[in-house]
Amino acid sequence: MSKEIGIKDVKQIAIGASLLGSGGGGNPFIGELMAISAIKKHGPVTLLAPDEFPDDELFVSASNIGAPAVSMEKFPNGNEFVNAFKIFEQYYGKKIYGTFPIEAGGINSMMPIVAAANMDLPIADADGMGRAFPELQMSTFVLAGHSVTPMVLSDERGNTSLINTPDAFWAERIGRNFTVQVGATSSSASDSLTGKQIREAGVLNIVDLSQKIGQLIQHANDYDSVDSALSELLRLTHGYKLMTAKITDISHVTKGGFNFGEITLGGLNENEGQTGKISFQNENIIMQLDGKILATVPDLITMVDIDTLLPITNEEVRYGKRIMVLGLPANEKWRTEAGIKLVGPRYFKYDVDYVPIEKRYAEYNN
Image (cartoon, rainbow, N blue to C red; front, side, top):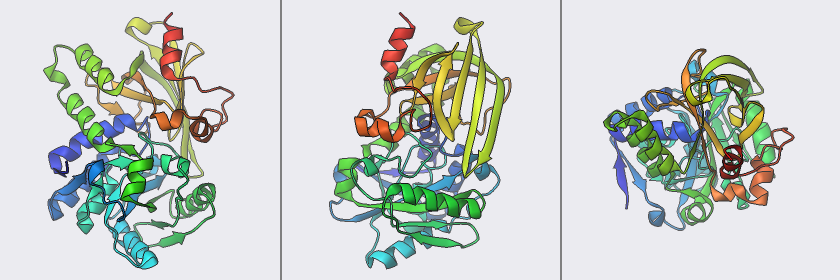
């Protein structure tokens, strides 16, 4: 059943999507402010349940691409999606019915709300990842054979580019080049799909799940203890606690429109004396504890505050921060042979086979 997304809902969705963003997906605070501002100006937006997606109507995703750290300083002005969607409608010669998130992540869970509020469109409760990934072709829609393009990229100065490519990998290369030229981050409208195609190929109910996670974390203090709240969070997400730690070192660099880096962790509590390491490319790719791999993409590796359970994105990582590392299983579409080839650790140049997190966790603890 459809429901309205208001200001209170935005805050909860932003928290939950930041957790699912696996360290990436952009800064949640910036996206939240943009979405709240749009709703204050235009009113709540409608979230459609999967069985309410009209089969033959046109939907277009709304997102930001580029290096998430840059979005902390280079803000969209709010007109990017209006400009991009107009170009789409001219291209297709028909009205866009609605929008949807291409991924779960701090800022990218918010961009469809911004677009929907500004243009009075509904949002489909589905995305193409069930988490966040760094590259355009990394979506379940591409796995199902759908094209990323046509894609319209826009920036806060009014630059726009309509891109058509023979495959999703060329879309990533050309789109990334445009993004680097306009300052390492841009707004993107892409993945034009019918309601039926989204329902068949997407990760469904992702916005609803994000809000449930956000509600739980917002009310963590209502539980008897942080551990009780964490247990409920892990039940909701089918996840695992991988480590309790303090951040002891951070190295990162922005290049080619991506944030690359490594986070070193010193164990606390039950992990006292142990050392952890998280490697990321926008999103967290691989997590090790004392040199043993505990989780890799496509499963999710995410950090939360040790006291509040609030998610911590890689732009927010600070020396001395006390955190817990959580691992969550990826959507089953990513655990296929084709999914692992597209987003598994070997794609990111790690000489490691993908092993489901539940198996790695069981082996480590036995």
